[in-house]
Amino acid sequence: MYDEIEGAVPPSGALLRRPTRLATNIPTDLLRSFLAIVDSGSMAHAKEVIFLTQSALSLQMKRLEDLLQQRMFQRNGRSLALTAAGEELVGLARELLEVNDRIFSRLGTEIDPRPLQLGLVGDFADTVLPGVLAAFAQQHPRQRLRVTVDGSAGLIDAFERSQLDVALCMGHHPELRRGRSQVVARAQMVWLGAPHLALSEELPLVLLDAPCAFRTALLERLELHQRRYRIVLETPHLPGLVAALRAGLGVSCRTDVYAAAMNLPVIAKAHLPELPSIDHVLLHRNVSNQPVGELVRLLAGAAPVPFSGGDDASRQ
Image (cartoon, rainbow, N blue to C red; front, side, top):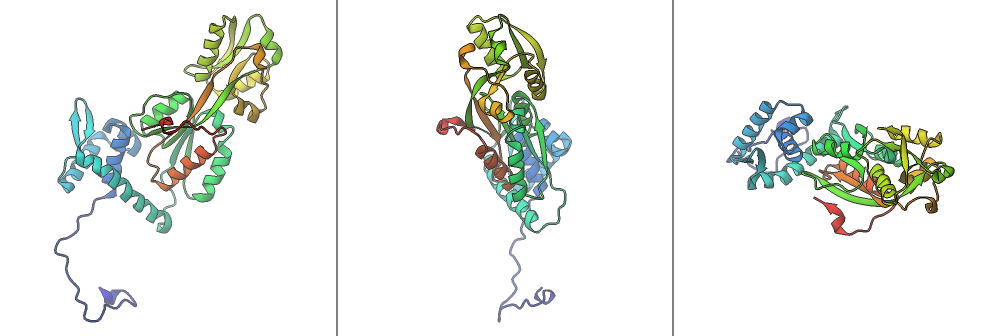
């Protein structure tokens, strides 16, 4: 062996020993499939992430269990649950794949790595995203990104299906099956629109389609104060809402941060009911992966209003 490597000389008197037992290697594709099932919650959802059929995934898990001579999953009704061995493998598999990916990042010639999937609501796409992308590209110039802009409900659903690695949403969200939900900021909702519209006997409204936390808060406050209103425009997209506001069609609400960034007219508090604040919520998983961890750090740092709610602001 030493004769084949130029400059490599065995120590004087050293004997080459054969290993008493051949090492068993675990293929990384088996571990990636295993973690895809764990993160997505089922084989049916995992197949949408790693592009394998459910039967192919089942065969991979059987091969993994045969290699380790341990059961990784057990049936819990109609769903899969991790065994004790499976729980232990989750952390070890993430560590091994992190090392594998770091080797490729530093020494490999991979030109087209798997894209990191980022999702965020339109408010953040118009404000914090450009700076985050610029900083991220400096640290990971070869990392592909795929950016999805959607409402919070759509982003949460995509995250639960493991179609997103990181998502920045708004509002209060339920417990996640997989991953972490972290409140990183809190902003105040404000009324937007031409000031004279607030004096209308019947308040004209421009709203995003339901479900929308801003729509819900606005309508609840108007109903509570028995203020008459009519909806003059609805749209699924934030640019349509902004266009309607600038055209003077009606009033709506977003955060004070977004209003300032987009130079939108803010209506004085005295003319309309007071609105609540709203949380900025960061969803993520697998922050041991270096690009994912960096993106999470940048998004959390870009939050305009720091939240100091303590540890109970985060949920596993």
